[in-house]
Amino acid sequence: MGKRKLCRAAVAGSCVALICWLLAGGSAMAGSVNHASVTAGHDHSVGIHGMVLVKVADGFYASHLPLHGSKHAHQIIMAVDIESLPPDFINALNSQQLVTLAPEAFSLNQLQAGELLQFQATLYLGHFERGGQPFKKQVTVKVASRLLMTALHDGENGSFYQVELNRDHALLVHRIGQRPSFDQIIWVSRRAPLLRPEPPMEVQREVDEAASVPLYRLSKGGKLTRSDAENGLPGWRWQAELYLETRDFQ
Image 1 (cartoon, rainbow, N blue to C red):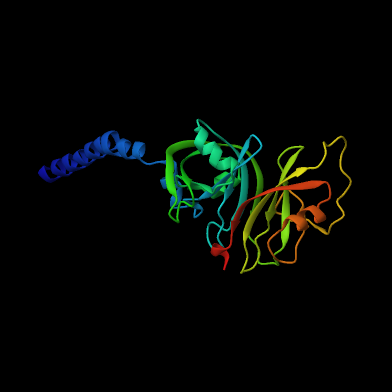
Image 2: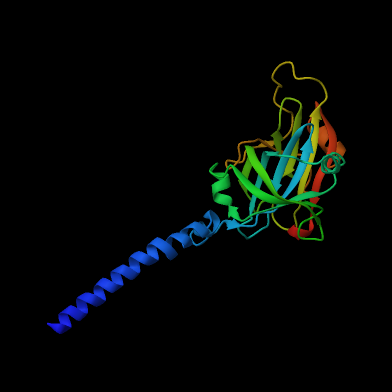
C-alpha cells in the first residue's frame, strides 16, 4: 500500500511539473520563436533572400538575387512600398547607383504564393555581401504586387522577359540560363503615349509557362545593348541599365 501511495505521488508530481512547464517555460518558448524559425525545419526555402532595389519613375521595384542550384534559384520581381526613404537615398536610386536589401529570413515559397505581404530589411548602398554600406536598418518593405515569379532554367541565354510596370514603362529582364549567364535589368519607356492596344511585336516570341509575362529573344546569348532593345522592340525607348551581374553565374 505504501508503494502505491508513492507511485501516485510521483505521477501527481510529474503532472504538476508538466503543467508548470506549459504555463511558464512552454508558453515563454512559444512566444520567443518567430515564424521563420518555425517553418525553417519544414520549408527549405527559408533564408536571407537578398534583393536589388531600383526606381522607375515614381515606383520602387525589388528583384531577388538568384543563384543556380540553391534555394535562391528563382527570378522574382515585385513592386514594393518602402516608408520614409530619405532624399539622399532616393537620389542614389535616381542615379542608378547599386542599392540592395538584406531582408530578415523568410520563406521564398510563401512570398511566391502571395502569403508574405511584408518583411523587414536593411538597406545597403552597394552590394550587401560585397562591401556595401548599411544605410538604414529595420525598414518595412511591403509587397505591392508580384510581377515576375519563375525558376531558373538550363536553356540558352539571350531571351528577355518584358515586365510591364504601367502604360508607359517596362523592364526587360534577362531569363537566366545555363552557365555562364548573367542577370540584367533594363528600363525602357514608350516612345509615344499608348492610345490603343499595341499590335503584336515583330520579334521571335516564346512563352514561359511558369511566368505570367511574355518572353522575347532580343540578343544572341549576350547582354542586351541599346540597339538590341530599340531594334527588337519598336515603339520602346532605352532609358537605363538598372542592374547587371555576371560574377554569380560563371
